[in-house]
Length: 195
Length: 168
Image 1 (cartoon, each protein chain N blue to C red):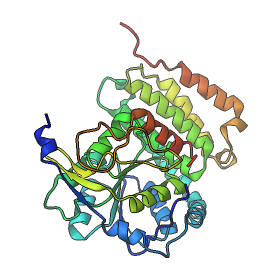
Image 2 (cartoon, rainbow over the protein chains, first blue to last red; image 1 turned 45 degrees about the vertical axis):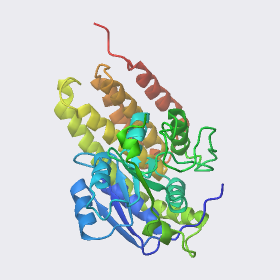
Image 3 (tube, chains in turn orange, cyan; image 1 turned 180 degrees about the horizontal axis):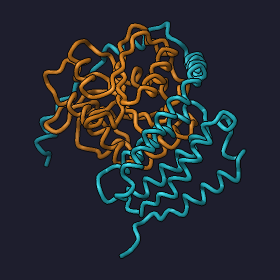
Image 4 (tube, rainbow over the protein chains, first blue to last red; image 1 turned 90 degrees about the vertical axis):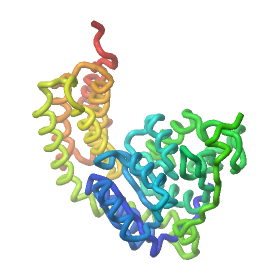
């Protein structure tokens, strides 16, 4: 599937990674994609400050962001009903592609997980996916975030709709959106740079 | 019977600023964006070695301070694993395959230790030495298959690391 063109000009990106070099690489990629507003922070406090001071358009956060990790931070952002950035798209970047981590990222309300090493193609495609496949938000006593039962038709590397996919509507729990095998396949493809 | 959480579920559509703005016409087409990003990465390569030196120094210090404890105390081997994963990932993004290869081996070693294998300082040491070699200009742009003796030897070392803790 050909990825659509995205226009990132004037969107405010917040890149949160403890490593300055990785931040710089991601920043460079985003600039290459046409982004002209990118803020870098190194820890969760930096994210909180940035989110408090302005309206962030998208957050790219490392899963191990100090001190408590990007997944806990994502959970905190989603659970805070007073946070005007509560529905901000969150893309979790991670070197840890174990199924449990991916599942946790999904369950804390991340929109997408990008496996490190990031390639320009994988980052562009994930941003395009978020832009062109907006999902319903689900608000329950135990979860706030994008509908986890999303379809991945054609994204990001030819993974098609599965027999068990349901339409996007609130209903009886249909189980995990992605099987572990599909998640693993998705990330293995990304890791080997085939997308 | 539906539980309370399900019956109380609210669903609403969010088409936020990111989604709306990103769909505007006039963006950078995918192929052009990727080409630009790769050129930018190429420009950033000279800084890679300085960064790698700092990472290696930090890792060396971490190992020096903690290896006498083995994997029994603290979570330093998890920190070491993450540091190696960072070198592996950045090495891949920057296209330095030998660095990626050695860092990936270190990841496997520390992951095995985290999973309960015995910590073997000599196995880590030889990879640290290999990493110092891999960062040098004459080796940096080589692939592991262009140095079969080195890469084969290091793979054998990694395969020597037991995946399971020794039985009592």
